[in-house]
Length: 366
Image 1 (tube, helix red, strand yellow):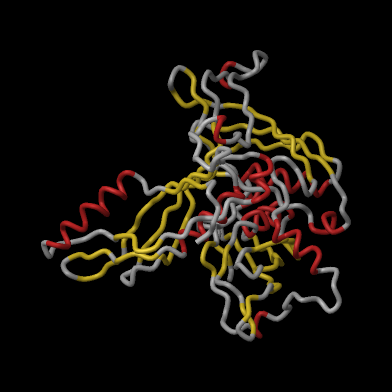
Image 2: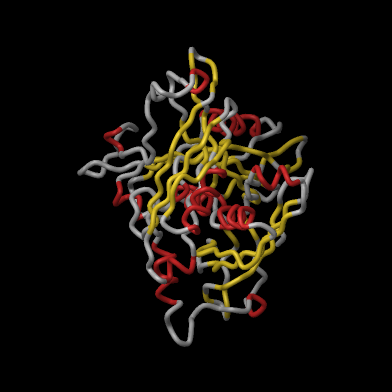
């Protein structure tokens, strides 16, 4: 159990009702929904504490007949750096399994996890500006010069976001940069017509474009109905950027890469047990790749840190640059079982092919 007091963790109202009602049904010998045995709190990311960000992550998960969480997915995340600790915590939860017709069964559940700051005395502050700041600033109204179809009176809201992948070669050389991307959000909340308007380096532009293509929004509204919107995202690439600061594990690995001999394991086959993906969302396929109707493949190298998180992804090869960046953007969210060697957690370098087959969902090739 972590000692962070800045986290408010609660099951959704529906899940609480199911769990509490299940106990009574179990007493009567009937069916039972899963009941929480152990919940581990997520770790509040230190970098987001410094910037004062608050957040919410909604995690979908499956509980198996043994009461273990075996699959997790994220349906909402106000900031990608909150996503990883939320998923990691949920995967460690333990339940009394659900019962149907007297037998343990698989059960699907959903839980919102709130991250917010605490007051001077450690008390939990209410959600709102007093409990932290929102990571994104979106104009409350569309600019007057925007076409009528893009005029909204209720701003879109980020629903699921990904961080930009800092181009690996530029990162290790400590090269900073910027990129600016304009994009439209359609009435379903998907990003469309993503266009790079400026970038100090081509790689920064490609990374920022892939980031925006992966985002999902609650759509803008006009007169209460979903409508189109046009936004711009100015992205800074630096280790201590306000919106996407470098996490502590990535900073540690950058230092480890400079050591000789390197403490990072290069052959995953020497691990005590095979790595298993626990959270591996597929990439969002760029519109240009979808339009080509051709198979796309990218090979992405990254380091699985000793907590099982994918860090420092870089594209080794790709059938197209935009699909390569899309694959790396997805890989940056992945989580694995903890890698260990000789009984001790280690960091391990891996390469994974990521494929997109037309008329099929993109899937990791691992």
